[in-house]
Length: 216
Image (cartoon, rainbow, N blue to C red; front, side):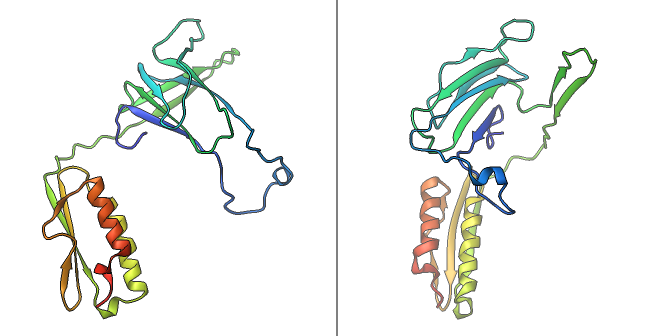
C-alpha cells in the first residue's frame, strides 16, 4: 500500500541491494559490473481485482498503457501493461503507483492450472478496518531537560528521540512546541505552531544545531 492512500499501491524496484551479512555467493564474485551505458527495460503486466484508473511513475517517464487481455482474449479494465526503457544507467529506484478500485477491501485472486491438473492457486488479502473515533485538534509540548546532568551522550539520545517523535505527530489539526530547561527555560516559539512541513523542518533543524539544547 502507498502510505495512507486507500486506493493506491506502490511498487518499488531498487537499483541496488546492499550486502548485509554472510559470505557472497560464488557466482557473484566475478560478475560483470554495470557501466554508465548500461540500460534496462522493464515490462509490468498489472492485474487488479477492481477497475484500474491510473498507472504512473513519480520517478521515471513510462510509456502509454497497453491493453493486457485475459486468457480468453478479451480486454479488461482490470488489466494493463506498461513498459519502460532507460536511456542511461538507472541512477535511482524505479517506482510505479497504481490507482484502482477495491484496494481498501478484502480481495482474492484465483488462478486455475491450465495444464489440466484441476488445481487452483488462490491469494487472499485481508484489509483490517477499525472504527476509530475522529482525532480532535490537539497540542503537543515537548519538555526537554538540559541541566548539567544531561551533558554528553544523554543529550544526544534526547535529541535523536525528539527528532523521531516530531516526525510521528498526526498531520491534521496538530500544534506543537518544544520547551527546554536548565537554570532557565527557553521555547522554540512563544506560542505553539501549526504542524506543517515548514515548522517540522525548522523544529528538526533547531534540535540538531541550536544552542536551545546545550546543557546548562
